[in-house]
Structures are given as C-alpha cells and as structure tokens.
Image 1 (cartoon, helix red, strand yellow):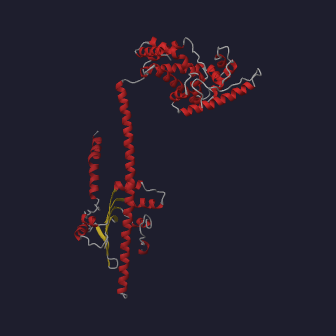
Image 2: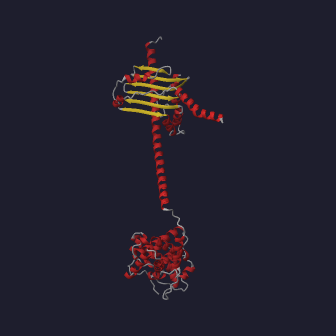
Image 3: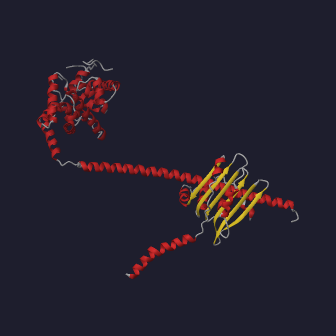
Length: 184
Length: 201
Length: 113
C-alpha cells in the first residue's frame, strides 16, 4: 500500500514538476517583435504573420502530401514551433526607426544567439542580418532582419530548422532559388 | 344535394363531432356507396376497396371536427379516397386488370343496358393510368364537372379536360375493337355525346 | 340500350354499395382503435422529445459551423504558412546575393588579396 502511495505521489507531484523544469530549461527563441505601428501606417503593403504550433499543425493538415511542394512544406514545418513574420513595403524610400530594430537586436545576444550573416550592400542598398539560436549543437531558432530602401522585414522561426529542407522549396510557392549548392 | 339533405348531413356531422357514435354510423351509411365505389373502381379489388374505404372513414372519425359543411364533407371524402387509392397504386402497381369475378359482380341491374359492354368498360377504365382513371371516375360516377374535378384532384382544368379527352378516345377505340370482334357478331356504335355539363374539349 | 359512350360509362360506373354490414365494420374498427393503448407519449414527454430533436438539430448546426470555421481557419493558416515561407526564402536569397556581391566587389578592389 505504501509503495502505491509513493508511486501516486511521484506521478501526481514529481512528474509534472520535472516536466515544468524541462520546459523551463528549454531556451525561448521567440523574440519579442516591436509593434512597428508607425511603419504599418506608412506602408503601402504590410504582412503580419503569426503561426504558433497549433496553427502550424492546422496548416499542416491542409497540405496535400501527394503534391511535391505541399509534401516538402510539411516536412519543413514538422520540427517547427512557430513562424512569425512582419514585412512592410513602401511606395518610396523610407528610413526605418533604428530604436525598434536596436531593441530587437538586443534580444539576439550570445551565447544563445549567433549572428551568421551581417551584410550591407552598397549596390542594393540592403542590410541583412541573420541570427541563429544554437542550443546543444542544434539550430532551434532563426531571425532574419532585412532592410531595403522600400521594404523592411523581420522573420522569426522557432524550432528545429533545416535550411536544406527550405532549399527544397526553392521555386515552389513563389520561393526564389537560394543557390545553396553553390555555397558549399 | 338538396338543402334539407345538406342540413341533415351537417346535423349528423356536428353530433358525430360531439361524440355520438350513432350519428357517425349514419354518416358512414350515407356516404359508404361513394367512398367504396371510388375505391373499388380505382383498385379493382373488393377486399382492398373495403379496406381502403374503412381507412377513409377512420380518418374522417379523427378529423370530423375540421369538416365545415356537407359540401366540404363530399369534397373531403372524394379527395381522400382518390389520394389514398393513388398512393396505394403507387406502392402496389399491379391492379391493372378487373377480375372476372369483379366484372360479374358489378354487372348493372338495369335491363336495357349491355352487361358485356359495361363489364368491358369497367375493365378498360381499370386499365387507365391512375390520374386519368380518377378523372373518369369523378366525371362519370360522381357526375362532377371539370372544374370540380380539378379542385378535388388539385389539377388544372386543362389537365382534367386533357385526361378526359384522351381517356374517352382510348375507351372508344378499345370498346369499338371489342364490339367489332364481339361474340354475337354485332358491333355497338358508340358516339361521344354532350353531357349535362357540356362536352369535354 | 343507350348507344353513346357517356351514358354507357355512367351506367357502367354506377356506385355500388359495400353492404349493410359495412358501417358496422367501420364502427368496430373505430371502437378497436379507441380501445388500443395510445402509442403517443404523454404531453411532458412530447415536449422532451421536441426539445431533444431541437437539441440534436442545434448540435448538428454547431458541429457543421465548427467544421466550416475550422476549414476556413486551416486554409487561412496554410496561406499564411506559404506566405511566411515565401518571405523567408526571399530574404535568405537577398542575403546570399548581398554576400556574393560584396565578395566580388572585394575581389575587384583587392585583386592580389
């Protein structure tokens, strides 16, 4: 009887506590996006996408595995917990509020976040920063901050990311060719 | 139907609605020929006609309170009997032939009429499709004019007239053929004459 | 003998009587019916059954509405996912192009490097 009570105590108290501890230990790679209210007001087109794990699984249910592009997208999002996108397009060149971008970049600090790419293009007048969250040797978060004269975009992907799988989606759904092979 | 007759029927009706079974029995006796004959000529089977006629009076017993007048009662009985018969014919469509027994049983007792020809006519009416058969019965058994038939069967007057015209043409042709080949070697000459309600066109 | 079809039909289709006992048989059936226990439910149960039917219909409508909404939500989520993947791919491509351009520019500026 005592053994049963011990097992019950373990099941009722210790297991949830252990689960909570494990969850607490997992790094939170979802960044807090600035509001960008002023950008949205001035933008001619804005995209605001919030797909948490529940919506991702619903979206996965509406992808047809018999179609190659749907199957590839389904495989890509299998390990993801969320995709958050904010993108603003303007009719004319626009100076973005640097304070909001700085606030965002402050969240992307080492050791969890590593900047993979930070490029400034004189030709395209574009700045692109790519950050990746590396935890225990595997990538489980990605942030892209891209500012072009007439477009400002932030992408935050939460979960296990495989860029090769994203590469498989090249040319599908209007996704441009990434030419990752050439990078190798 | 005379005024006195209508008053008597309405009196029976109100007493039957009040729960007086003798009044309802009298109503049944008064209308049993109408209901049973329509059922018999529609179904061409005595047992089924009896069954259907009883069903009609059972339904009348349940809904007597909704009957407003003697004329309404006649309309109701004709309509319900024909509709029930058509429903039954739809469910059991093999009622096409009048049996020999029926033919003999229904031989008219009037001595100046040709019993063989009348039997043949009943057979032929029994072979008409259900809707034209109902129209012919209401016209020649109940002596209703096309407008009354149209109201009873929820048809347009033109449809009623068309059914009558085609049915009479078929009957005339068939009876003509039968008469031409009759066992006594004589052919009855049948002509379509205007009736008291005028000719059907 | 009448020799026209109308008269012959009237005569042939003359009403016939089902017999003297017909009314008695009808009344016996009526008596039988009234003695038979009514199958219909008591008034309270009739309300209950009507309420049950209404509840089932209402439930079916809710389920149908949920299915429609779920489908709309799913299609919208799919559209957003594809849009998100498109934007992500586009920005990765931009990064790649910028890196490439800058590398080429550096090579041109310092050919000996």
